[in-house]
Structures are given as structure tokens and as C-alpha cells.
Length: 186
Image 1 (cartoon, helix red, strand yellow):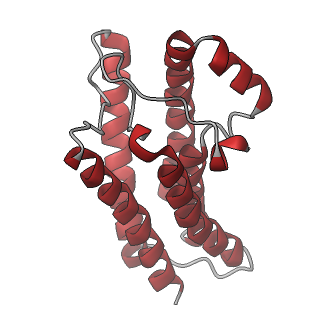
Image 2 (cartoon, helix red, strand yellow):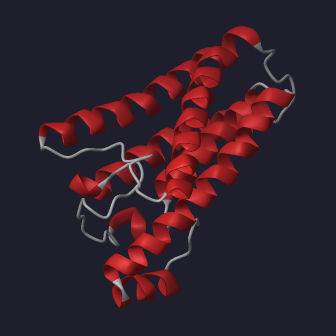
């Protein structure tokens, strides 16, 4: 049963991601902006992030087939984290509307979203990603799933910090006020 819930959570999460990307593409919006930078340091970081996120998705898909299921009471925490991550991600990308992107690019303009779930967290979609990775690490505890969860959290945090610099440059005082009122994560 745990393996099925893990696979359904994984499928639901990435279905939301891909569905939103397709919807935005129909509106002429490029969604995956990771690695589109002129600055080589940011560009290579984002390419690395893209590769690691892809590998993370592959490991999440394979985890129920190749790793042992946690046999402790912690399994309920892992199940809760993975299920909650799907709902949180859905709420986050829905609240972003046509402004949701993977990465940022100065050439593509967006609006600052501060309503809905974004009143409580400046980065609920990243929180959802972290919860999915951590949930899998709890459900299928081993060095690889734990390593992927830690790497994902570190890389996503670095991406968030880059996006915050972009948002300050783009939205100025409006974003600074938002930063002062709403926490980065939760």
C-alpha cells in the first residue's frame, strides 16, 4: 500500500507540473527558464539544478521498486509529507496563474503574486518539492534518498535566493515589503 501511495503521489505531483507547463505553453509562455541566463555562473548552476531535479524525479519513481519500505511508525509522517506535497504544489501553481515558471529570466515579465497561499509562504511550490523529497526519504530510508532530499533542499534554497534578487530588482519596494511580511518558507 505504501508503494502505491508513493507512486500516486509522485505521479500526481509531476502531472500537475507538466499540465501547468503545457497550459502556459499554450499561452505562449516559456516555463522552463533554468539555464537561460547570460551570466555563466547562474547558467551553470541552473543547468546543474535541472539535471539534479531530473535525477531526483527518476529516483523517486524508482524508489518503490528498488528500496525497502520503512517499517517504523515514521512511515505515517512520510506518507503525510508526500500526500501533502501534492496538494500544496497544486495550490501554489494554481495561485501563480500565468506567472508560474521554473526559474526566472529578465526578458520574460511576470506579476508579483502575494495572494492565496502566497500570503503564508513566499515559496510554497519549493516547500512542496522539499516535502516530496523528504517524504520519499522517510518512506524509503537509505543513503541515496536522504542524499537526494538534502541536495534538493540546498539547491532549491540557492535557486530561491537567486529568484529573490531578481524579484527585488524587478518589483523593488513592493517585493521588499512582501519579504518583510511573509516568510521565505513557512
